[in-house]
Length: 192
Figure 1 (cartoon, one colour):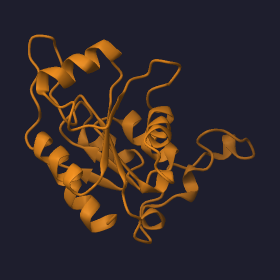
Figure 2 (figure 1 turned 90 degrees about the vertical axis):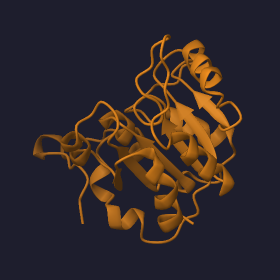
Figure 3 (figure 1 turned 180 degrees about the vertical axis):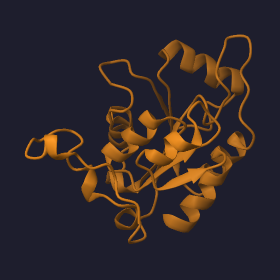
Figure 4 (figure 1 turned 90 degrees about the horizontal axis):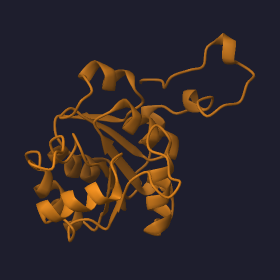
């Protein structure tokens, strides 16, 4: 069992956004079967290679993973720290508009990771009953912190992006995946 980060003695007695993290463990998160209704996926490094206007390429298995999640009735939200214009451009270039239910970026007063705003806004916009019905996957420590802070049941680090494996291992998570193509299997085992 892997405990989440715990505040040191200098922080005891002070409330803060990280003060509750020590209460959540991987075994507590997956103690019961919770149906996953929403997958919140980081765009760059998780589903597509780092984006430039000249070259946009999905990561191996990304489109198949999105299709498999949709076939299982899981709604999909893609998130990015880039502008809404860049997000629309990527979705159009890949032809993914019909594969995703929602695409969000930190505009309209929503903060990106490590804050849980994008995940929680997706839950509200897509009318998910509870955040426990959410899986979050990303390639950075901030993605994993956002998923954990939101209360998502599955928080998966994906090893196809910018963060080193050791960085993701040190961050709060329930799973580490070699690629996003493994997420449908994780949801089938853990959350269906």
